[in-house]
Length: 127
Image (cartoon, rainbow, N blue to C red; front, side, top):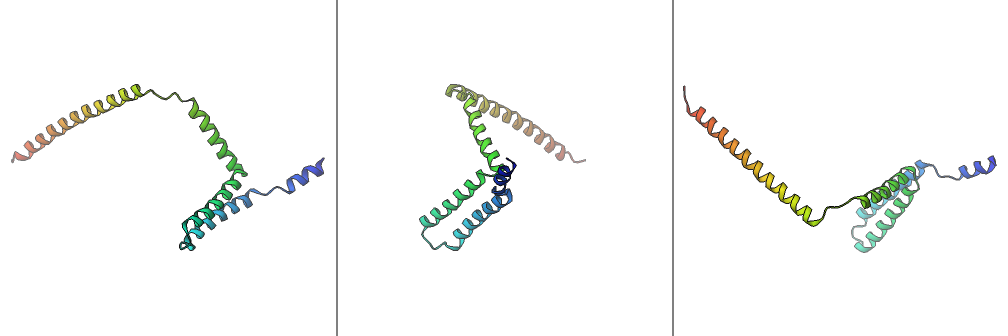
């Protein structure tokens, strides 16, 4: 039994090799885009898409990639649990926010005007 366990682990690709290959895919796609800029756009997009899919496919088999995939799945589940507000509630809340913003800006404008006039009055008094 230990022999089979050893053979199974022997054929696993180390994480570093996977990340190096992912980096190579990304760098290669960048250089293909830069070096073959005269090639038809469709061909470049196709090649770069294939390289990106290879990079993403390889990334899924890494520990961090699995964590990212799990995070995306859990985020999707959490998004489904959200109770989104109705249109009327959103409209009402927006109206309140706009009203309060206008009211506060009017108050700040008034205070600013008073302070401006006070400073102008103090400056006009020459001792």
